[in-house]
Each structure stands twice: as C-alpha cells, then as structure tokens.
View 1 (cartoon, one colour):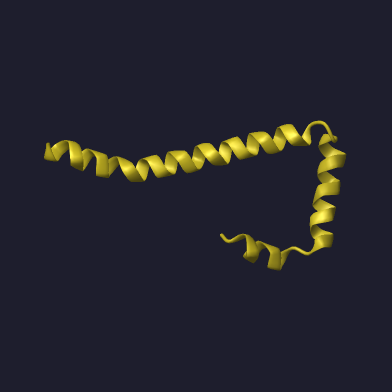
View 2 (cartoon, helix red, strand yellow):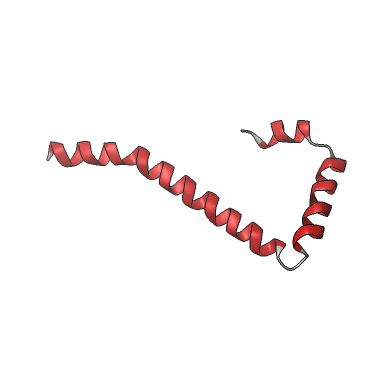
Length: 65
C-alpha cells in the first residue's frame, strides 16, 4: 500500500486525534519504545519475506552444481 493512498483517507485532524489518543493511553515516554518495536517488527517481516523469495533461487543454484 502506498503512503500517498493512506494520506488521501486521513486528514491532519485525524492524525492529530490518533497521536493525542496514543499520548493519553501510553504516555510520552513509552511511545518511542513502541515505535521502535514496531519498526523492528516490520524490518524482520520484510527480511523474512524477502528471504523466502530468495531461497528457491539459491536451491536451484546448489542443485545445478
């Protein structure tokens, strides 16, 4: 999903409301930790999905030798 597609659905008011709710629920100190964890999770997911796509190619190369 493209970032610009998401921006069409959310206005500045929506984003501000979401951020305000997050600050109320988790507090200002906990949000960077949550975002860091989310980023690491996305990174691992992308790495795993990319790794699965590359495995068949690597197996073909090994079988050819």
